[in-house]
Image (cartoon, rainbow, N blue to C red; front, side, top):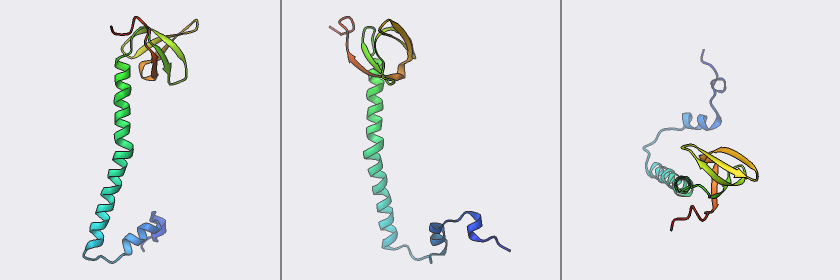
Length: 118
């Protein structure tokens, strides 16, 4: 004896898909494909593309980081860069020196006189 449909995890939309008579797939199928493509285009242009641009700007910001820059970390700490390594930055905030991951630098607030290119 076959198991009832609700016991194998089928939901109401799946019932509709399973028990809809199959047709030729005329204009309605083409319209569905168009709508699906439109949704993917909207997702790409409103979400994915701006996110890629923001990631590229952040990557460039981290690449341009220099000693003496005043920075803001993603945790809200303000400080001055005193030492740089590949993936770590030493930030002086007040009298404390903090080692933070380079990726946690959220913004460069202003460049120091020694860090500014002439």
